[in-house]
Image (cartoon, rainbow, N blue to C red; front, side, top):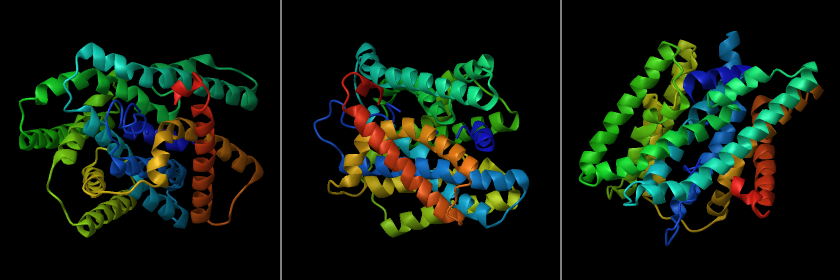
Length: 358
C-alpha cells in the first residue's frame, strides 16, 4: 500500500465530477451512454487500485515477473478512468449560462458534504490502524495528509475538484464567444500545458497546493464538452484499436524504462486512450441496463472502495489469503470490493440525511 501511494503521489494519479455528479442535475433527460461510461470508468478505478500494487512492487524491487506483467497490463488499460471522469464533468458542466452564486450553491453541497465526511472517516481509520499496529497515535502525519489534500490516496480527486469547480463559471463565460473548433484547439493546447506542468512537478518533485491541481486537468475538462458536442463519428473498431495500442505501449514503456511515469494521467498515450474511449461511448446510443442504473451509486463506490480494499489487503497479509494465481487474485478482489462497496453505497443512499455524503 505504501509503495502504491508513493507512486500515486508522483502521478497525482484518483467527484461532483464524472464520478460524483449525476449527469442529470436539473436536466430533462439522462444520457444513457454516458451513464454507462461512468459505470465502466468506476469499475476501471477499482481495477486500477487492485492491480497497481503488483506492478509497483515489481518496479520497486526490480522483479519484472508474471505478477508484474499482469499488474502492469491491467494498470495500463485502466489509466483512462480519471481522464474519463473529468471529461464527463466537462461535458455536462460547460456550456451553461448560470450565475456564479447559483452555480456554487448548486454544487457546494454535493462536493463539500462527501468531502468533509469521508475525509473524517479515513482520518479515523488511519488513527485506528496506527493504534492497532503500534499502540500509539501519531497525530501530525495524519493531519498533514489532510492539509495537503490526501487524507487517503483516492480522495485527492475530490480536493482537485474544488479548484476545478471554482473556475467553471469563468470558463463558461470565456467559451461563449468561441466556435467549437476554436475550443477544440484550446483544449489540445491545455492538454499539452497540463502534461508539461505535471512533467515539471514530477521532475522537480514539486508538490503544489491542492487548490491548484485543477490546472493540469483543464484540457480534459474542455475536451469533454467539445467531444460530446461534435457530430463527427469514428469507426468503433478503429477507436478500440487505438485504445488497445496506446495501452499496450504504456505497458511496454513502463517495462523498458522501469518507471511508473508512463501511467501518468497526463501522459500523451493515456490522453489518446482516454479520448478514444470517451468518443466510443458518446457517439453511440445505448439502452438502459444494469450499468446505467449502477451509475447512480458511483460516488458511493468511489468513496468507499479504497477502505474496503485496504481492509482486504490487511486481512490477506495476516492470513495469507490467496487464490494461487495473480490474475485470479485480482479478479476476486475486484468483484468483492465492487460488490461490498455497491451494497454499502446502496444502504447509505436509503438513509435520510446520511445519503448526502454519497
